[in-house]
Length: 287
Image (cartoon, rainbow, N blue to C red; front, side, top):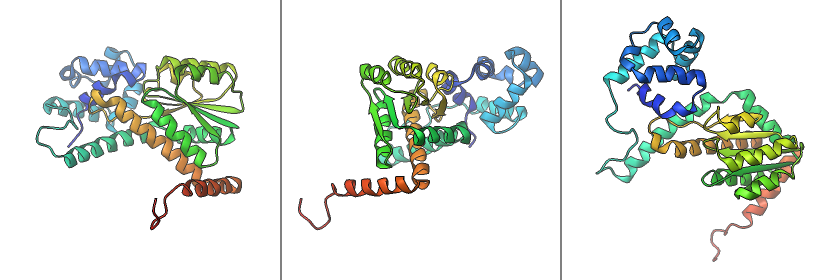
């Protein structure tokens, strides 16, 4: 079944570029009128170029403008009567699990499409070349920052995480260009994270951000912007889906690094694995 493009646009409107937002708002203001437009009509109505309309169509329907009109027409004829992924009364727990799997598959696919290889590789290079990696995340983003830190430490990469709103800014002032900051924020608008990044930038520290909004204040401050997407199914769970996509990104980065470790890092990794394994209870022995 085709996805409801109207629902996806409504959910993701705050994460669109200014040009994309113009097109989306034109569609959402009167979907039935939109399907009668020629590309020239939409270009004039939304005040955007025809090239921008083509790019918008490719992004959201993987096709041209005619396909976009068809998908909007389908969405009008098949409105969503309830949120996709919402648990209904009478559903069992495994049904809930399957719904979430389908939703996260969509979010992960959009995350894959949103990130270019050159940006991902640039972020990896900054991490590998840094004397110190400092990761900032507050509230729910702190869980992602913490996980990323431990994954990097396991690879022998010197990393630390900061989740206190005051300590972030203080710690950032002590870094230099040999360090790298990784800022985690779903919205990209968390003031304390932005303040810390500004302090880091004053010391010429490279900044990588992992966010759901490529047009956010945090993204504009960052050298490399990694986009974590939501599925577009429900505005109520956007942040949760973005957080899961952030975890996908950090896991992918660490898996890539692990597969490409040089000899010195391989030795560190082996030693660290032994240390971590020594804290596990051996089978057959009493605790």
